[in-house]
Length: 345
Ligand code: COI
Image (cartoon, rainbow, N blue to C red; front, side):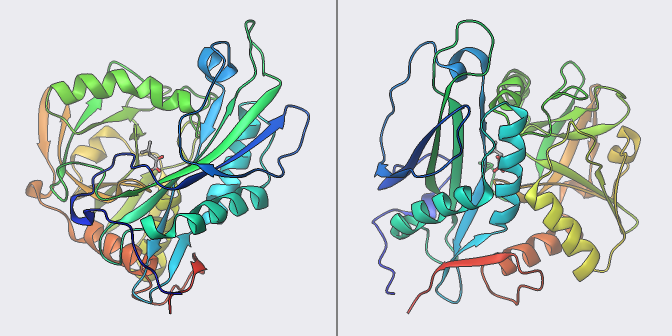
């Protein structure tokens, strides 16, 4: 198929929602199964002021990306993992558990209908946002009787405005992101609203993002508001283990596999202390939105620690290069992570 594109200034893409042709929409009752749904024109939605999502935050979402590749295909990356996490997140928030096949079909249908908004090879990616929320009214605290699922998407460039400059982060000592046995490991909208105040305060002080501490042990780090975190010391890669309050990131898992299986490095999913963090040779964060972004400065209790002389580190760079090369079909996909959706001519 010949892939003509819409008229967008691809070089100027940041990480903002750009309206596309259509979005997917389905509804489900609390005792029902997810099925059906259809593409509708992209646009605003109507909601009761008593909707469960507005009053009690009953909503979860996903983030995944599609790429226009060097082989002229449009592909999805590890969509099975997003589908699995959506099933867990819906269950945890008392939303009818979403069937992974239903989820994947909705993502594929939305992507196909908006294929001409996918940035050309080498010019960014298509960020896909499946989201589900409680639509029916609730005045008392309870799981509501009806839910809406939508998939919308937007062409994107870099998440951080700074582009490739190493990030300037602050270790957040006043607020936690998630509580033990809370909803930190579900992609719940509430996790992100909890991060807004610390993030806004940190940005006012000139930081790009914050590093949250483990609420059980404040000597250990967890993750950023928008990404997972890795450290490297003497060639050994570590990332905080999935404790229940950390998001099981798709990029986190991919980087663990790339570092251990392709770069042959020792990788540990384990406890990571602040002391290890500030003495690291490299620090970087990972996520669908942020991809692999190096960290250059960390402030902890008003002390500033420079990581790798505030330069991007070699291991982060290699992980990013291999990840991007797999996603863009520039090298073979040794893990079976790529799912072609549209084949170019
Ligand atoms: C993602 O990386 O897809 C995320 O969900 C982080 C986001 C809140 C931008």
